[in-house]
Image (cartoon, rainbow, N blue to C red):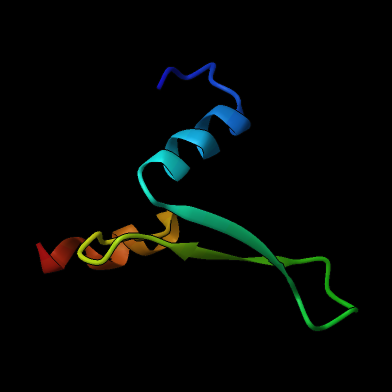
Length: 59
């Protein structure tokens, strides 16, 4: 996938690999935040960007 690919192209590629990303509304109506739910095939490790630095010493 190239850097100029659209979000739709990326989501299509993820879906082809069996990876689903869902935006979930925050239950607290006062917050302007949304969560993400990620479903992936068993055995595939999915780490959000902010967690990668925490796990580097685990390698």
